[in-house]
Length: 417
Image 1 (cartoon, rainbow, N blue to C red):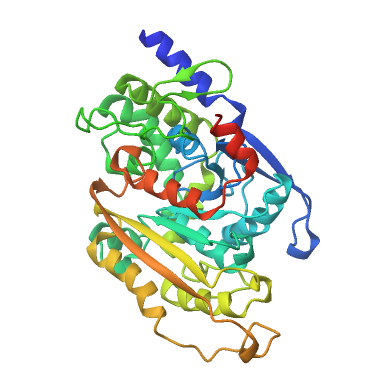
Image 2: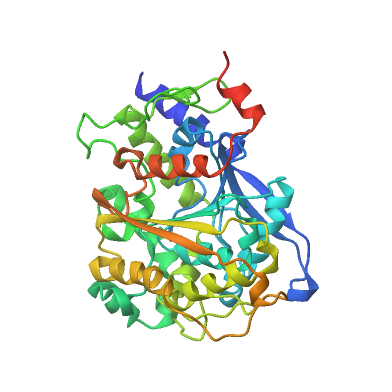
């Protein structure tokens, strides 16, 4: 395939309407929002699947940044819904202290709009905080039979990770941190055309994109074929097949995604940068309705919610929480990875004296718990962890598929006699 054909094919793939959906929330006087709120989102993978993931990407991981997972999601008959956070892509901007609240208001309405009853939850890096809030606010949206949550390279505040360059960044004034998006745009316009995309500031964009020539030739970007697996190419639905095994295609995909990212709004990235560093500290990581201070406080709260929330009476007694850590992670570090895991393992053995959330007497409620599994992905780093070549994304998608019984309709569609 010539370079011009490759560029055209990648452009057609990225321009497909599946990656450019829009949804509008009506004005909400209860939250003080007098205007509609518009959100952009991607809806890709297997559109007919009942195994649906609500996904939230990293700091600069927009709805397009993980589009290379389209082929893998189809192969496992999984549907991925990835909304852009406020002020990113085509999503309207909001005030810094309304970012989490707006996300939480949007999620159930978007799923109703898409006629999706239940989802699995997943995140990469900074998206962890948004997905954790979603889990606490709407645990009933997870599938009743096998509630499943997965975190990739979960974000940990520098106070716990002790990562030196992030501790230094945390010392900067909040207004300066709030200019991060402008700095990223400047570097993309004026520096990277000369220096390439090797600067650490841009890793958060590159990290959600597929690798190409940095991996051994023997590594494939496609899964093994099975009865209900997709082919080794990803079709955009309009007749063009994108070969994700071709390094030139991957390079072109990365290049064009970056072009799309900077062509759309990035102002919300600055707000998220302030939030992830807790600058200012007066803006919490949670919504006003379900307060918590940090992950080590949120996990015990989750454990209590799944036992006391009346909306979960029909849910499984065992929830599944997975985390995939990168072998080398310069954003979280070894201390951060261990701290995140400890939050989940220690919460299983602790108790709380907080008031009950349930209207049922304790003796009438069945005890629920969660299984936590942490895995380190060899040779992966924080940015490229979700690349299919490392295997973690395929393992995750298979677990998503296994968590939801395949419908009769899906069996007919994917496994003809």
